[in-house]
Image (cartoon, rainbow, N blue to C red; front, side, top):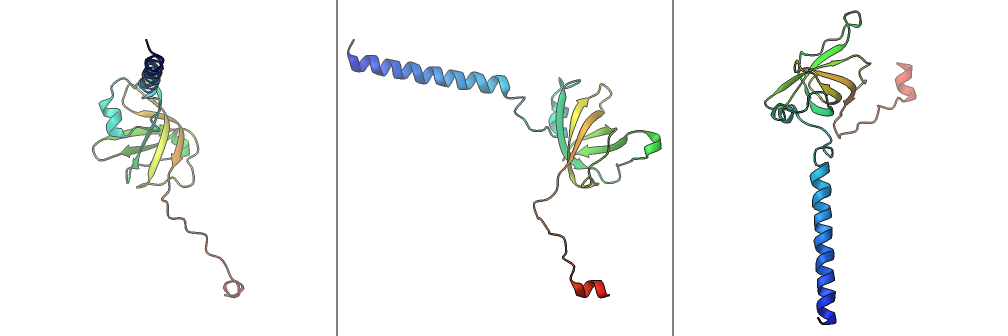
Length: 140
């Protein structure tokens, strides 16, 4: 075998090994690389009960209930087709409100509700700095 053929063979085997390694890496970690699932994706995946996952969606208008004497906060996360009831025993973040996007981390219970251990409220990208007070405003 010529020297150039051996070099080409080594290069081909190296590229084949690299491709196989990348394929194996992504096939193993494809489910763990998801930042969060939508309620529709959770509905389609049946094997998520008990696993710690993140779900992101819009907090349904009129669904948020939180009375400290009655236990954990409850609300519903929705997307275009499905809804997931969420229970959370901690303090909700200041940006959390209805009709905005939230991401919750926790586990799906057998009754279909989601028991959250962390709630992240998302905000829009339009930053508005606080209105600056002038000495003239304080005179009024």
